[in-house]
Image (cartoon, rainbow, N blue to C red; front, side, top):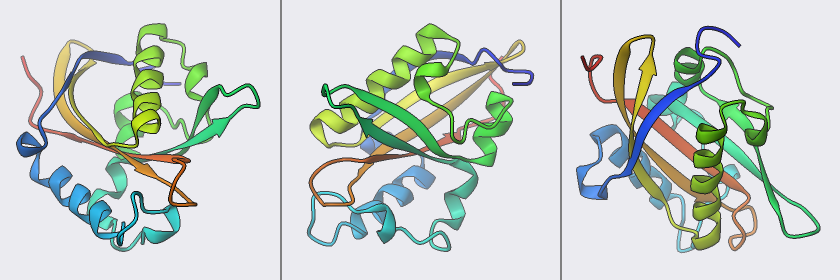
Length: 165
């Protein structure tokens, strides 16, 4: 999988919406404009041309519901900036196949919370690349093809600054 086969995510913490990076505030505004009176927009409401400012930083996670009520998550889209920081493309991969158990469980928990309550999540995290720490902020936004049941999580994570010593 490349140089970061074991992602070095540390310190995932919530962030107040008012404290989000301007790029993420812009995406949240775009997402809200696509709701058009519904609780959630659908993937089909999103226009890749309109998403251009965020494309490399986007991911889409399909929500797969099992007959027993369980959930699995698969990356539908894994943006080029995520590929750079993770050292490989996870498009088409299952989240529960991520080798790093702590990181995998954190992701599954975050995605499950978005689905359970249908609200966005805003967070900050540090990502270790070699011996350098990079700080990111991210949003996770629910999408629904029927307007009721979340079937995709749209995520966007942006680096906030140069590496932190």
